[in-house]
Length: 519
Image (cartoon, rainbow, N blue to C red; front, side):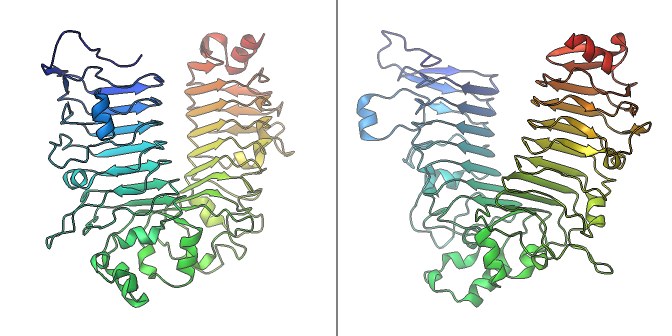
C-alpha cells in the first residue's frame, strides 16, 4: 500500500478538495511502502474534526501529499503543506519515519492550520534535524507537551530573525518537556526569544550530550537575552536562576547535574518544590547513589524514580532516617526502579527506613536483572496499594509468607517477564497451617514467566482474596495449579487463563479451573 487516495487520470491541473467532516482520528502504522496519504498532486485534504494523528513505522513516508520531482529537487518535501488542513488537531505522534526530514515548510508565507495543537511526540525520526521552523513555533501558542526522543535533531526551533524589542513568546502554555537520546542536539533555539514558561511542571533531559538541564533552564530566564551571556559571573547566573526559574513539579537529574549541585552552583530553593524526582544516567561502573544531604533538599517529594544507572544500592550508606530527626523522603508515596542492571538490593536490612516504607503506596521494579529480593525481611509496607515487577530475572520468588501478611492494602499486583520466578509467595517456615488474607487485592496479573509453578507452594496454607475480581495468567507453561493450598475468591466470576475466559464459579474455584485447563 503506497497511499490512501489514488491519483485519477485525466484530471489535469484542477485542484480537488477532499473533505472528511466527521473524521476524528487518523492512524497509519506498519506500512513499509507507504509514501503519501494523497497520491495525486492536485488534491487538498480538509479534516475539520480531526483531533489525533498517529504515523508509525512508515519508513518511506515524507509528506501527506505527493510532490513532483522538480519540487523535491528544489526543496525537501515536508509532511504538511497548505494542501493539508487539520484545524482542530490536538495530538500528533510520529514514530520510526526514516525518511522524514521536515514536518512543516520553511516558507513563513504559508497558512498554518494547527491552531489547537497541544501535544507532539516524535520518536526515532533519524532524518529530522529541526522540529519547528521559527515561524511555525511562534504560531503554536497552545502547545502543552513536547516529547522528543531518538531523532536527528540539532535544534528544536530553527533560527529565526533577530528578536524584536518586544520579545516573542514561544509555547507559553508548555507544561512538559521531554528530550531523550539526541546526541546532536545543541540548542533549543539558537537566537532564543524570552521564554515565559510559567506553567512548566516537568523537565526531563537524558542522553543529550551537548545539552544539560541547567542550560535549558537558563533559556527560561531573562539573562538568556543578554549579548554577553557567555561572560555572566557565577553570582549573576545564580541570581538569574533563583529569580526566574519556573516551579517544576517533576524534575529529572543526571550525573553531571548532581555534580553541579554538589559544587554549590545552584540555590537550594530551586529544588524545594518538586513533587517527583527522577535520577537517571549514572553510567559509571562505580556510580554511587546521591548523598543524603542532597535528598534532604526535596522536602515535598512524593515520587522517586531511579532510571538507567549503574547503582548497586539505591540509598546511601549513612541511611535516610535517624532516631529523633526529621526523615528525608518521609512523604514518599511512589518508588520506581527502571533499567538498573547492577542493582542487587533495594533496602539494607540494617537501615532505619521504617517511616519511608510505611508511606509507600506504589512500588514498581522494571528491568533489574541482578535484583534477588525486593522486600526486606523486617519491614512493613502497610500502605502499599500497587505493586508492579517486570523483566527482573534474578527473582526466584516475590515475597515470603512473613512479608505478604503486611500487604494489607494491596489492590493491584502485576508480575511480568521474571524468567526465574518459581512462585509468588515463598515459605519461610512460618506459613504452614496459616491463613493469608489479601483483603483489598482486586487485580492480579501474571505473564511471561516460564519457570512459574504456582502462586504459592505452601500446601496447608489458605489464601483468601475477598475482593479479587480480575485475574489474568498468560504464558506461564509450567503453572498447572494456582496454589498448593486452598484458595477462596468469592468475587471472582471470570478469569483470563492462557487466552481463555473461564467461568470460575462453574468450575468450582481457581485451582480447579487451572487443573482442567492443563489436563
